[in-house]
Amino acid sequence: MRAVNQNLNRYKHRTLESELFAKITVDPTTGCHVFNGPINDNGYGRFQFRGQKIYAHRKSYELAKGEIPAGYVVRHMCHNTLCCNPSHLEIGTQAENCNDTVVADRHAKGTTIPQSKLNEAKVLEIRKLYAEGMKQKELAEMYGVDPSQISRVVNRKDWKWL
Image (cartoon, rainbow, N blue to C red; front, side, top):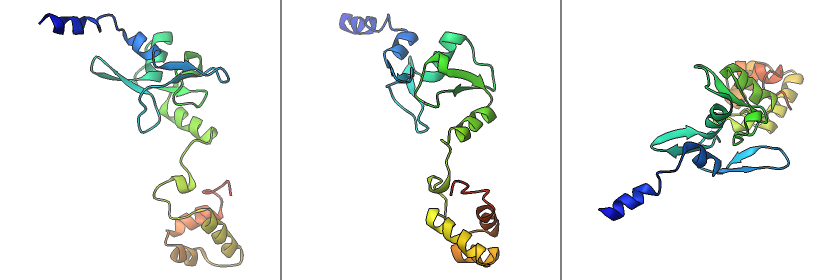
């Protein structure tokens, strides 16, 4: 029984802060405090402490700046999802956070969208054929997409960067 109690005592002095900081290294070129622990599917650092799953950047923000109001998210102003540097973090709305990804060009687009039926070559071909007089409905049938998709392609609402 005594051996079991000794094992439990070795974790007695662990704190949430020490667990978080043990998994962080500083990138001298960016100033980012990079989380080196487990990463979830969305690219955010996440670790467990006493049975709780904790997002590293959120906990870092809370420790440095206080509570995150309900309905708000922690935004990475450095656009590095693994960064835990409180000076790189700011609270905001989900809409602001989504806008940050668009501005930083980190959002899913083109062939990075799994259900995309078009690729760069097809989009350029569609625009060429449309400019030569082919109808949007014909192009939609030819490429197996909805006519509204063809409209967004030829009017540069989608695939704008091409």
